[in-house]
Length: 197
Image 1 (spheres, rainbow, N blue to C red):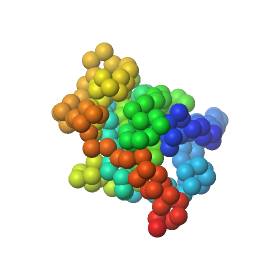
Image 2: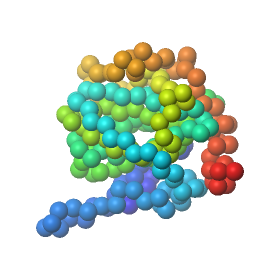
Image 3: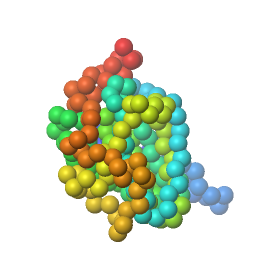
Image 4: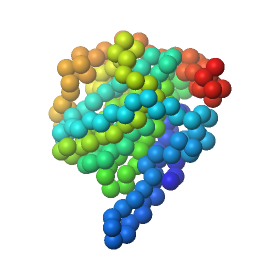
């Protein structure tokens, strides 16, 4: 397994080694110890989600208040998606920037994103199946959305006519969203490295 930092601080791409033989294929798609070396603490796993989307569906940009925030570890188990990480931390050197990674059932890459970062996805195939591990359980009161088609973000979604949920379609733009603060996120990362204190 190789783990590479993305251009946005707090986000990494994970490239697994795949082992093929006449029986099929084997790979490690998640290693808590390897992630801990990078983020400075063992990842907390509180909930696992699976979403299945038809081609052209765009989900996001989702994020949670910090603290506690919600870190995510995301992979595509069927088909292909464009996975997008957005820096929503006000005051961050890369605030408002985004990076897209193709996740698919061939390379079987994964993405880890820290608390305070936004997450979105566009299905590139029919029945694109996304599996993601979350550091906190679903808490509607602290979870938010930035409109995925906001021109201030200028995300180049690979869909001629993106299909959005009503909730995503009515989300506020970046300029009107209640966003996490970079310094607060940094304090949260330090607390996690110190064992949650």
